[in-house]
Amino acid sequence: MSLSSFASFNKINRRMIFLLIISHLLWSCAVLGLWSIGRLIESDLSRWSAVFIALQLYAAAQLLLPALLLHPEERHRGFYLFWGIALTLSVWLINQLTPTGAWLSLLIVTKSSLLLLIATITGAAMARYVHRLWEIVPVCVVMTLADFASWLYGPTASFTRQIQQYYLTPEGPPPLVDMILIKLAFPGSTGLAPVFGISDWIMVVFFAIVANRYEVNDNMGGPSGETLARQGRIGRYLPVSVVALFIAIVLSQTTGLFIPALPLIALIMLLWYFGRYLLRRA
View 1: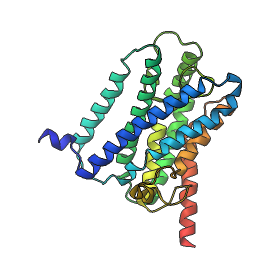
View 2: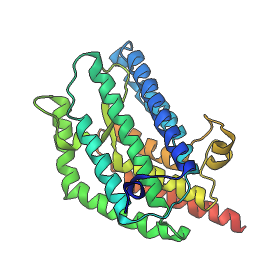
View 3: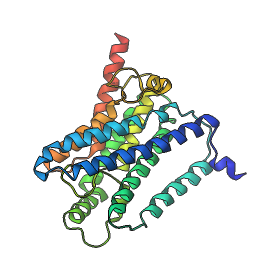
View 4: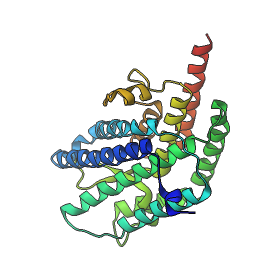
């Protein structure tokens, strides 16, 4: 079996993945620019944090448009093993870089962009295995129970304490879990701060693509995401899953508590799917 069978994509998917890479690089530049602006804002204007988060998530939502046009391809285990190792290795390698000064912020933004790209590809791959819309119900139930269990008794609780301690008193190397956290710009902050994990964005993408595949319009800004993607219209796509993630982040920021995003995303998406299904049957 040749290497190309493990690593190649068809022509359409190669073009979409190229667009994904370019758009994620542009997103990095936008976040870096917002971080530069945020440094000029006094820290007592922290109430604008929600605005900064909304802008960055809204921009990230536009990154999903090329993913909605990816064509399903028949794959085997070797393909997923090859790319799983390659992408994991890329995350590990980029975290071995230790620049200083302005280069540090550039590296952090690039890391977040890479994580979003990997999460988008992973979420798209997972979505192709949903053969009926109702199959998302057990996915949501299992995901919610697993996340709550991890939050209460498992590694998430420990990871949360480690991250909080490190960013309050940064001493020594960052915790290992820091490698898979997406960091965003905040007003009045000298650096970028972790906001959510790669698993959260994987499920955001998963729900967006499942909705698109089963013709459930999840765009709160008008036409479906696929319609906008085919027409090349950027800036009007706001999927419900991104809004759900925003709500979870804002709740966590305002309460000062760690609130698992996945259960809230799952609940909101189930309610949205159910509501749209009832409207279609009416």
